[in-house]
Length: 428
Ligand code: SDX
Image 1: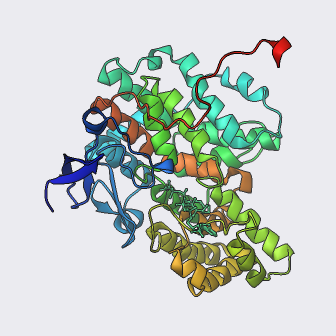
Image 2: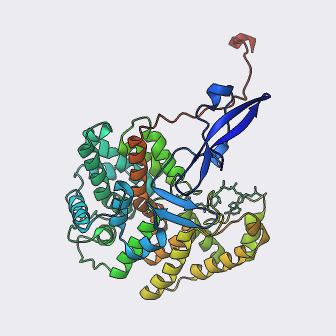
Image 3: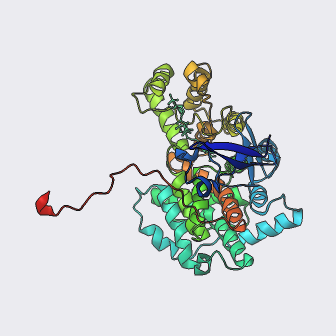
C-alpha cells in the first residue's frame, strides 16, 4: 500500500499521507487537508471516518474478530475475570497475581458511597428509568470528590478517581434498581467478589440472608467481560469528545452513560426483549415481524440485529447465545422468547434483505435473555451494559488524555439562508 494518496480539488492535485495500523488497517490523514485546499470532508455518523489512533481494542467487522489489547474475546470470556479484563483495558496488559490482588484490594477499600447519596436517590420517583438515575449519581461524584474535577492533577489522583468509580458503580447500579422497586438500599459486602457483591446489592434485603448463586455470578462476570469495550462506538466517542474539553472523568463517563441509553446503541438490549415479548403476545408470528422490519414505510427495526462495523456475526453474540443455553439449563429456566429469538435469527440469516445488508445478531440480541434468567428486570439491562462498559470508557478517556488529543470540534457545510437584513416587527 503506497504511503500517500492523491486527491484532485478544482483541478489541482494534492498528496495526502496514508497511515497504517498494526493490523494493516490504512487511513488517509486529512488533518492538513483543509489548510491545503480550503475544502473539508463530510461523513454524517462518521461511518467512514477515523477519529483517533487507539491501542485498546481491535475489531474486524468482516471476519468477526474482537480483541482487547490483542487478546481474543473468546479466550478472555472463557478464562479471565471482569476485574482482570478491566485492569487489562485500563493499564494496557494482564496483571501479575500481585498486581491483580492489589487492584482488587484497592477497589474493596472504595465500595462504600457517602450516605448523602441516598438523599439524591430519594429525589427520584420510582418511575425514574435506572439509566437516568445512574448518570446522575456518577455526575454527583464530582460534588463529593471535587479534586476529581481537574483531570490535570497527578496520575496518582487521577488513578484514585478511576479506582473509586470502578468500586462504586455496582452500588450505584443496584441503588437505581432499589429506587425503582421502592426497596431499602443495601451496602456493599467486601467479602464477596465483584459480581457476587453486585447481586447482593441488587437482590439482597436487610431482613433476609441473600445467597448468591455461583452460576449466576459466573454468567454475569462473563457478560460484563463481553461488554467491556468496543473501540470507537457511540458512547466511547462521547466519553472521548467530552473529555477532550478537559471536563472531568466523571462528567465524561456520565455523558457516555447517556449516549449508551439510546435504543440504537446500548438501549437495544431492553428493546430486544420488549420486541420478543410483543411477538410472543402477538402469537409468535415471526414472519409478520420480519416483513415489518423490511418495510421502509414501517419504522420497526429488528432490534439486536445489524451493526455499524460487524458485517459478519458479532463474536460476542455467538458467545452469549451459547451461554444463554447453558445458563437457562443450569438454572432450570424455560423462556419461550429464547425460541422466538432463535427462530427470528434463523429466518433472518436466510432472508435476502438481511443477507444483502449483512445484518447479523449483535451483542444485544441474546444478552437480555440471560439477564432475564438471572432475575434482572428489563429496564436494568442497559445499566448492566454500562456496568460492563465502564472499564472500556475509562481506558478510552485515559488514552485520549495521554495522547494529549485536541478538543473535538467538527466542521460543517452550512445550508441555511444567505445574508439578509433584519425586519422590524411592524414590517413583517
Ligand atoms: C451496539 O458501535 C458499536 O460497537 C456498538 C456496540 C458496542 O458494543 O458498543 O456494538 C453496541 O450498539 C450494538 C447495536 C445495537 N442496536 C440495535 O440492535 C438496533 C437495531 N440495529 C440498527 O438500528 C442498525 O443496525 C444499527 C444502528 C446498529 C447500525 O446502523 P447503521 O450502521 O447506521 O446502518 P444503517 O442504519 O444505515 O442500515 C443499513 C441498512 C438500511 O437499509 P437500506 O437503507 O440500505 O435499505 O440496513 C437496514 C437499514 O434500514 N437495517 C435494518 C436493521 N439494521 C439496519 N433493517 C432492519 N432491522 C435492522 N435491525
